[in-house]
Image (tube, rainbow, N blue to C red; front, side):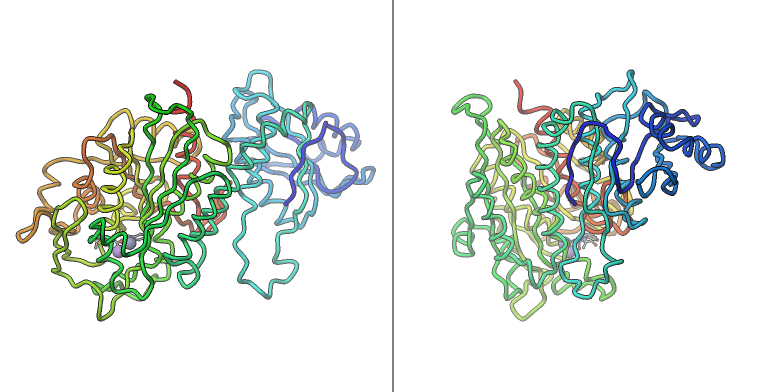
Length: 503
Ligand code: BES
Ligand code: MN
Ligand code: ZN
C-alpha cells in the first residue's frame, strides 16, 4: 500500500473519509463535503441510528450522484478534544481494514483535528498514516492460489492535510518504525524449516547495511566461552545454535556516561518441541514463534540504526532449536552455565531460561551495560495470568519498571509488573546443583521463570518481559493484524527515545 500526503482537496475518485465528532457534529471537512454532495452526509446521519460519531464508529455512504467519488466514509472521532496520537493510529488501522473489506482501491483521508486536541494536525496526519501502514501488514508469501478478491484491495492511501510537507516529514521516522515492525513480524511468521539459528543469524547480519556492527558466535566460540546451558538446549538438534551480538553506537559520547550501552537480550528458540520433555501435538506448530524475543531485539536494533538514534545499544540473541533426539539433553542432566553456576535441568521444556542464562551473563560480562532488558516467550503461565492483553514485566529496579510501563501505555503495548521475591526464589534451589530449571508445581510459573533468569543477573538494572501471551495474536486489532505482533519493538523504541536520548 502506497501512502502519500497532499493539501486538502476533494479527490476525483476512490473513497473519501471525513470525521464526525460525538453527537453527529460534522468536522469542517465533513461540512464542505456535505455541501458538495448536496446534503448526502446530513441525510445519511439523520437516518443512522447506530452512528453518533463516537470513537471507532464508521458509517459508509454510497457515492452521491453528483460526485465522482466511489463512497464517503464517516469516521467517528469521539469528543473533539479527546483524540491523541494512539487514537489516530487506531483510526488509520481501522480504516484500512474497513476499506479493504469494501474492496476500495484508493482512499483519501480528510480528518480534521479540533483546536483543543492534544495533537496537532501534522502529527495527526502522520499517525493516521502510521496506523494504516501497521494494519496493512500481510504475511502471504506462501499463499500461491489467492484470488484477487482474497487480496487486499487498497493500494493507494492519501492523507490530506494542510501542511502536507510537514506531515510527510513527521511520517518519516514512523515509516522506519513500521519497517522494523514488519521485519520482526516476518521473522516471527516464517516457519521453523526456513528460520532456524543459522538463517536467523544471517537475517540479523543484514543490519550491517544500516551501520549496526554484527558478530555471530558459532558453537566453538560458545563452547570456549562456557555457554553450556545454551548449548545443552541445542544439542538435540541437527541445526547448530548461534549467538548474535548487534551493536549500535549512535551516542557520540566515548567514555562519557552515555557510552555504556543499553542492552537488549532475546530468547530465540526457533522451534520448541519441548525436547525429551516433549510437548503435546496439539498446537505445537505455535512454537515456531518461540524466537519472538530475539526477533523483537533484531527489529529494535534495526529501528535504532534506521532512525540514527543518538544512543549506544547492544542486542544479544541466543538462537537455538529445542529438539528430542539421541543427542538431546535429558531430564536430570546437570550443566555448568557460563556464570559458573550449575543447573539441574529437570524439564527440558523449560529451555528458554537456559538460553537467557548464558545470553544475559555474556551480555553483562562483556558490555557492562547501563541496564539490561530481556524479552522471551518464556511461560505459558503468563497467559494464564494476563491473557493476551499485556506482557508480564519483572524487574529489580523500580524506575526501570515504571519507564517500561509508561512507554508501553504510550504506544499501546502494555506491560504489567509481577513480583520477584526471595520466597519464590527458594523454589528453584536444587538438591543436586546450584539451581534447578523448574519449581515444584504449576503455581506462579512465570515468576519462577523470572526468578531463574534473575539468578544470572548481577547488580545491573534489569527487566524481563515475558511476551508468551502477546507475541502472537489470533484476532485482528486496529494496528495489529492477527499473527505475529512484533510486541516490544515500538515499546522499547519509545522507552529508548523518551528516556535515554536526551540528558
Ligand atoms: N516456549 C514455551 C512457553 C510458551 C507457551 C510460549 C505457550 C508461548 C505460548 C516455554 O519454553 C515453555 O515450554 N515453558 C514451559 C515451562 C514449564 C515446563 C516450567 C511452560 O510454560 O509450560
Ligand atoms: Mn519450552
Ligand atoms: Zn520455549
